[in-house]
Amino acid sequence: MESRAGTRTKLDAGAASSGLGLPLMALLALAGVLMVAALYLALIWAPTERLQGEVYRIFFFHVPVSWVAYVAFLVTFVGGLAYLRTGRPAWDRVAASSAEVGVVFTTLSLATGSIWGKPIWNTWWGWDPRLTTTLVLWLIYLGYLMIRSYAAESSQGARLAAVVGVMGFVVVPINFFSIRLWRSLHPGPSIGTDVGLQMEPAMGATLMVSLLAVTLLYVLLVIARVRLRALSDAVGEIKARLGVGGIQ
Amino acid sequence: MATLGQAGAIVWKDAVAELRTRDIVLSVAVFAILVIVVFNFAFQPGPQGIGAVAPGAFWVAVIFAGTLGMNRAFVLEKERGTLAGLLLCPLPREAIFAGKMTASFLFMLVVEAAVVPAFGIFLDLPLFLPGLVPILLLATLGFAAVGTLFSAVAASSRSRELMLPVLLLPVLVPVLLSAVGASAAVFAGKPFAEYCTWVQILVGFDVVYVVLSAWVFEYAVQE
Image 1 (tube, rainbow over the protein chains, first blue to last red):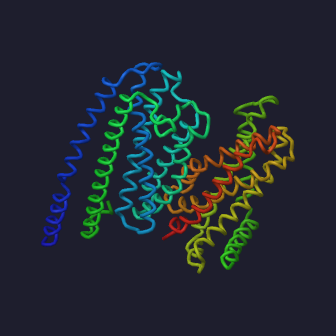
Image 2 (tube, rainbow over the protein chains, first blue to last red; image 1 turned 90 degrees about the vertical axis):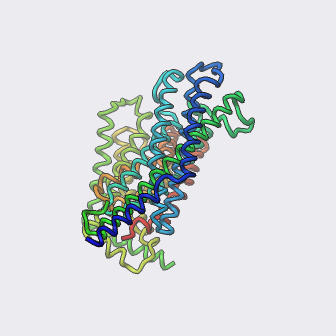
């Protein structure tokens, strides 16, 4: 009885200390403001495109979402490497959370791309290098999440997933450079080319705000998932110590 | 040099085990030929369309059959309880990886030696294409490297046989893509200069995959 009460206080203390801190609240508020601003800029303020008309506005979501997917998989790669080297669970939490969010954002990238493709290319999907490699990426990181959940114990799942995350990242640069390497239906890069930004300044500004908002959303989602994982690991530990149920 | 001898011993062990059971090579070769048969039903290419379908059908047959065979590389060891013994051997992990990879590479070559003639006969393509040999060797090397690593990964997870293709096929896409590209050019009788880029991509990915796989292998088999 004594020890059980002691553990409960400890758990309560843990939950209290993991409540949203002030910096995180500020970040959340900033993300909210940026989101609304990005919506306004993208849907109302930015000028209509000459050739595509209003449809092009999905660009302000499609590009940031795809960009975040790359960043997410890069973080999974680095986190996986660090986990393999150090064996510290914190690295695995970051890698796994980033992979989850990355899969969601890749799904969004494929979905927004399809919606954009229908009126412009007159097809939801074309087997073009960019689209194909994005789909392949999506499949690789689904495999990453599957191998995690199919492992007999969580530490083994973390290790095997890290191996998959490191190998799978090989395909990310191919996807990124595919529009430069192959002739593709997908439009070429409009940022970071030799001629600089290939769009109206107003469109560029809108894209930047949108990029910032979506990147911030990614950061917040990963933080939330990492904290959830840390708490769930802590609960698992306490349960194991008390001898209640299985792990997690 | 010692590592090379150790890897050689593992290749020898696998080769002897294979010679006694003929588990892998026989079933995989039969499966590969079955894939070609299924392709024929599915596409009914006819003499004109064969050139367009052939490279894809060939590589799908090789990759699917190879994935089937790859399952045996570590799952068999796991099932027989010999994986622990292998890992307890006083060998560097790189030697184990090199041995297993080389064994899988050789099995695949034997299978391909059977599939290529069968393919040539069934699809009425020229049998002897010297240009195909380096492409086969390079693609099989990349396949064996990633396949060995992911076979070890899949063997440690539940639903082993299911996990391997799910992990392996998407990561192999660059190898498959360049192999299909290069062999399509060979089947069409084009000069090397025209498909040189594909071969370069293939070599590049082989290097990346062999080095990365050998490097992370020790984490895949950690108990």
